[in-house]
Image (cartoon, rainbow, N blue to C red; front, top):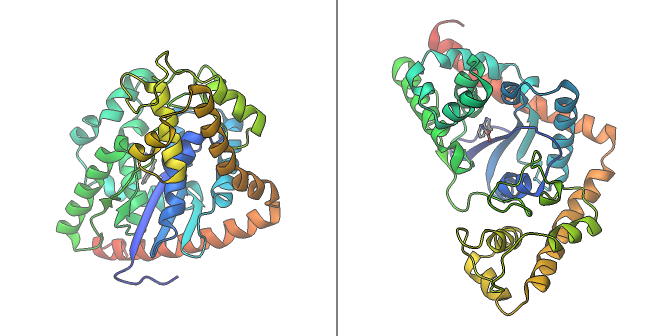
Length: 330
Ligand code: TRP
């Protein structure tokens, strides 16, 4: 696991928040699996320090972290070139975040859309404000050049680039300037019951969310009762037909087909038949993940966690050494 200059380094993070659902899998994790099949070095991190900004319940958070970890290990991410680890176990993240905070203006943080949205509902503690600096630190600590993220994180990535550029121009070229992954970013799934809202664990109607470990029966039931419309034409139109479009999106994401082609495939079906076809695709997709998840023993997990954390630590320590040297605090 040596650093090869022209090999890409990928970093991405997922917040541990409740049971992993299909929205998490098709929005991020499935994409990570594909990236890990390419010739890059990847760090996939459970960003529990980021979750603290929402002041989660202690037991919930603890359970979410271990569940998310197990799903990531079971997801099929290629562990030969990928490192999976928990952010809080690598204290260098928070250390670098402090250093980088000196290269970021308060005004920039206040202008972040997510800060503006969240600070109105939670009230404002400074963790919410400085959250994007921690995110910059996550990315830069492994000198990542490629970051797969959804559109809601593009602004934070832009800020990361600015922070890296400012550091470099003051103290020497330490950090690569990271870019957003091109190509399909993950699918954005909507609730099966309220297709105008995102699929989430906190959705008021749990029948709108498919959890990774739902039984086959439960998946079929949830899809059969999914909300569509009264037209009976299978067409992708998120504005006018959010329910049907969501089902097409799910199918396209799992099969890696284009939306247009997926739409065509089903155009002659009744809604009922279409729902079952998508449900079966989901069942088949989740099957190997569930199986691997159940097979993972405590020892397997312990071994993987130790080995991966060591790799993440080596990479972070190397960057920190260069940063400290550049700053004169070595
Ligand atoms: N902020 C991201 C989110 O809420 C999670 C995240 C934290 C992340 N650090 C990251 C994503 C670094 C990509 C790179 O989804």
